Amino acid sequence: MMNREGQAVPQVTFPIRLNNEWSSVSTDDLFKGKTVIVFALPGAFTPTCSSTHLPRYNELAPVFAKEGVDSIICLSVNDPFVMDAWAGDQGAENIYMLPDGNGEFTDGMGMLVDKADLGFGKRSWRYSMLVKHGVIEKMFIEPDVPGDPFQVSDADTMLNYINANAEQPKRVTVFTKPGCPHCTRAKKALNEAGYSYEEINLGAKGLSYSTLAAVTGQGTTPQIFIDGQRIGGADDLEVFLAKR
Image 1: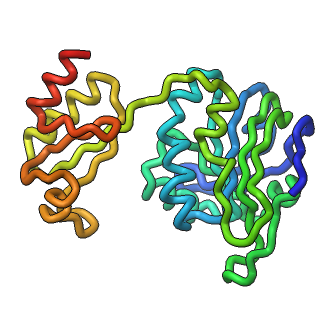
Image 2: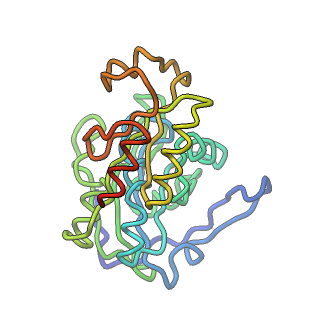
């Protein structure tokens, strides 16, 4: 895979969906006069892309913004409908989902690879890059080895390049259940304190009280964890936040 640092990004016009209508966006629209992170991946809804690659960029987006990044683009050789559905499924509100359906941008980057053995056809190799005013400053390209390597194109590697001393957000997980007023109170307190959080809602996707007990050792909701430390319920959270 060719490293294109110092070169301009390919000039491409992408067909997209905007307000349920067909529209288009150009390379200049996306990059001109901006500092942009692009991370490209093999496909929407695929395991590594959904579990790690996209979520971590979305999580660190506020940190990147403080470091002068104007936007973060997730690029894949998928159609607009698939990319929009994936964004909704992931709750990726901080990421611009860019469908390179015809693979033109990816081909221009020299990153179009044949994954016909998996039934994928032509797809993007996994990489990330920092683009300033349309010129590629830095690229992190996954090694050309069998499988789906994911070693250097992750969000933390990119952040370490931009500013190794940047303060990262705390990782917050909240176990909740529908109709729980204390859960609502806890989420409100986290929002007011400026914490982003992952919500694990009992009753959704097969999650149950058995899940809650197995993971937290508790039988009531909410259960809040911050950076791996169990804080407890809503009252415990208020005590914790008061001591910040």
